[in-house]
Amino acid sequence: MAGSVSGTILPFSFDPELELVVDPALLDGDEIFFNAARLDRSLALDARDYTAIAQPRLEPIAQTVA
Image (cartoon, rainbow, N blue to C red; front, side):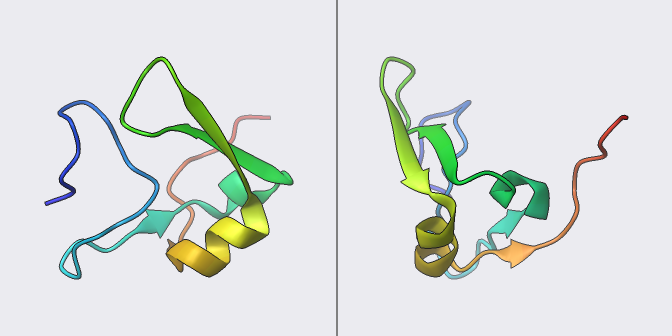
């Protein structure tokens, strides 16, 4: 459904049936970094811009250990 290479997770959803869920902790920093379906190149994106563009559902999905 994601249309990405097996083993990769894209930070966007291009299929209306595939809901994008993001842990709010991912947006704690100023930028997010991801590999755009390639392991040899990374992209940085302003976290606020990412939220505005991707419009993910924000849900805590990872547990932080103190």
